[in-house]
Image (cartoon, rainbow, N blue to C red):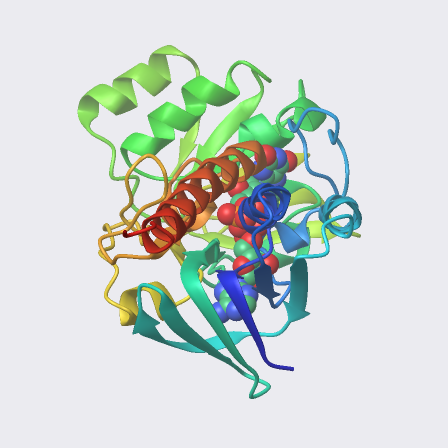
Length: 307
Ligand SMILES: Cc1cc2nc3c(=O)[nH]c(=O)nc-3n(C[C@H](O)[C@H](O)[C@H](O)COP(=O)(O)OP(=O)(O)OC[C@H]3O[C@@H](n4cnc5c(N)ncnc54)[C@H](O)[C@@H]3O)c2cc1C
C-alpha cells in the first residue's frame, strides 16, 4: 500500500491518534503509520485518563480507532516507518513492508522505549505488580508493602511521592546507593530502610511479586514494586532527519510540537518527559492545531488572486 496525505503521522498511541482526530475533523488527509508497540504494552490497565480510567491499552486504542473511523480522510497502516527523507511540503516515508507514503507535513509521535530490564525476575512482574509511575498505579498498591528500586537523588524524591500511598516501603538500590549523607539522614529520620546489596532475584507468582531476595541473604516480603526504568527514544528517525534532541532522548519542540526542521513536528512521550497518556493526547491535539494552521496558511498564500 502506498499513499499521499497532507500529514503523515508516525506512531499511533494517544499522541498520534489524538492528532489524527483533530486533523481529520479539520478536513485534512492523514495517514497514521503504527507498529503497535507502545511502551505501556505490558500493562493491563491505564489509569488517570478521565472517561477511560482502568481501560486496557488495547481497549483504549480500539475506542480511538472506532472514533477515527468516522473521518474518511484518516487512514491507518500497521507497519514500521523505516526511513524518512524530503523537506517541508514533500516528505517521503518508507516502511518495513516496502510501502511509500508522501506527506506535506510529518508528525513524529513515536513515544519512548524501555531499555532492557537488568534485574532478575523484574520482567515477570512488570506491568502486573511492578510499575514505573505512582500516579498511574499507586492507587492499586495503596497501603501495601512495597519495594522501591531506585538510586541517588531520585530515591528521596520517589520516597516522598510514595509516602502518599503507603507508609510501608523500603528502598533497594541494587548496588551503591549514590545518596548524599543528607539524603541518607532524611530517609533514616523518616524510618525508610535502605538496602544496598545487589538484588539477586524477584520471586513472583503469576505476575504478583512476593519477595525481593538480596545478595546478602536478606529476603524482603513485598506486594508491589516501583522502579525507575532507563528510557531511550522510540525511534531513530527524528534524529536521522536532523531533529534536535535533548539528553533524555526527547525531540526538542516548542509548546505546539514544532521542531527545528520546517514541516516536522513531534508530540507525546517522544517530545516530553511527562509520561502520562492524557498529556500525550493533549500534546497531539495541540500539535495538530499548529500543523493545520500551517497547512491552511500555505494554501491561503498559494490561492491569492493576483490581478
Ligand atoms: C508500564 C507503564 C504503565 C503506564 N501506565 C499509565 C497509566 O496508567 N496512565 C497514564 O496516563 N500513563 C501511563 N503510562 C504512560 C503512557 O503509556 C504514555 O505516556 C503514553 O502511552 C504516551 O503516548 P504516546 O502516544 O506519546 O506514545 P506511545 O503510546 O508509546 O505510542 C507510540 C507508538 O509509536 C509506535 N512507533 C514507534 N516507532 C515507530 C515507527 N518507526 N513506525 C511505526 N510506529 C512506530 C509504537 O509502536 C507505538 O504504538 C504508562 C507507561 C508505562 C511504561
